[in-house]
Length: 279
Ligand SMILES: [Fe+2]
Image 1: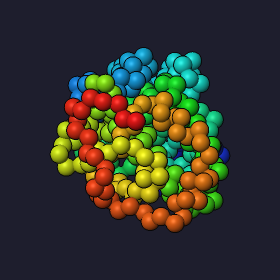
Image 2: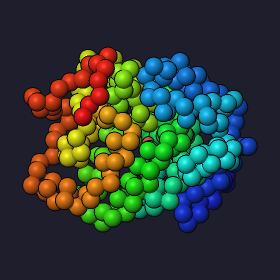
Image 3: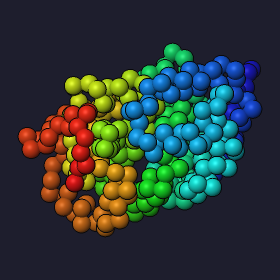
């Protein structure tokens, strides 16, 4: 009988990254993905992301070693990355974020799944998310998000609304800058197809971020987004979380969810090259 050796999972769901155990082909997959995004992202990703990407040891010869990554990241914003085997329960995830710990999956995708993933992998988690954890505003926002999640952990409706906020900001957010629209969402930044689609395709709507609107909007996980919400700055995103969410949840009780792809007539689609600050 053959036994499959699985890495031990501790009570907090972390595993040892075992960086030395990554194969040559796993490192090569990382390099292929990272090389592609290094060509696609300049001029598309926000400058805060590009700064983090260049300052952290992420663009090396392969999959980053979390020990080296954490040495730099922790010194910048107090965040660190731990390895987990897969999705962790909501309560564990929120608790980690509230303590400035980002759980990243250890595994990397198969070469046959270069664009579409059933479950995000280390490339999504580290290449997509970690550079902006070096930015003060996103570092603070993610911690605040974790604390907010812990407050509504046992309230399914509020939890669903809060998940939409994460989805349309941290995963699929766009930012208006003086140079035009830029990407800050990790789900986009880790996908070459969606990096181009989100900014250049005529198919999706790009509308100004409004907190209640976002928390009412359903989302889809199996294809590119139909709508992207545009913030004016990462600091504005953080400042928005400083308010008490309780009245917002209360006001949402009387309002219906908004279906995927539905955009209101008074919501203006923002062209990619528009150069203005949204207020
Ligand atoms: Fe993600």
